[in-house]
Image (cartoon, rainbow, N blue to C red):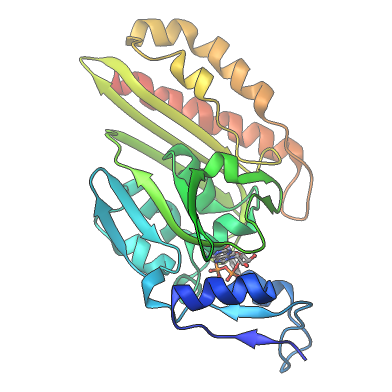
Length: 284
Ligand SMILES: Cc1cc2nc3c(=O)[nH]c(=O)nc-3n(C[C@H](O)[C@H](O)[C@H](O)COP(=O)(O)OP(=O)(O)OC[C@H]3O[C@@H](n4cnc5c(N)ncnc54)[C@H](O)[C@@H]3O)c2cc1C
């Protein structure tokens, strides 16, 4: 028999987590599916579980100075409708799963699942998101890119809960998000691409590119992004081919049930070229 808990407060939840190691279930749209048993029976979890969707302190989207704070239990549908959320994240969330699942699923679940194909994760990398993690006695924050260390592997400790996702405010004139899946709804990504661009006086001030499902973790190179800062259209056009080849080297996809490595690589390369075309247009 699976031991289950349903805490009402965050204090209670972190205490239960510390004492029992119970695994949190937010929307359950990953966990309930992964551990499902035969139809009509309850999922067969091998450890105690803790349902956290009833904790009010874990709900809501707010602005704290220059940072958008999304509490970890906020449903995807709420995220997609909040005017505080950057358009690129709203675009991505609107394409996740289907409306009924978005009423249950959360960004925290997408992150902690740590799939290289997690749609929100790719965008949150580009947005420089941080995660907030709490225990009974302490709280720490870290960049999302440090939190996810491999496919299905994170820095989450056995006594911790994710309490929020924090996104620094971003000036971005252009946002580009493309997801390639088998269908429009209820399909995990074969690959995804997030591009952000901010220009001033026809020069690049900030350019970011994140690529999902083409390596063990989301691909983003801050070093390559910095190499284009200050460039005009002519300078970017001259550098474009070299930059493309540098990105191409970072794309090391695998074959799996959703796609082939070859398709993932060639389609991602096409999307990078499409984003570069938009960058040049914006600089004209
Ligand atoms: C039909 C279907 C379609 C889908 N389509 C998509 C899609 O298009 N794109 C996509 O990216 N995903 C998709 N998914 C996967 C899933 O819906 C998402 O990953 C969703 O964001 C998971 O959120 P959740 O709250 O339901 O996670 P849960 O299943 O509740 O949890 C997932 C993991 O996160 C951990 N966790 C959750 N909250 C916390 C917390 N606060 N602190 C610590 N750990 C926590 C859990 O312990 C678990 O390990 C789909 C799933 C299904 C079933």
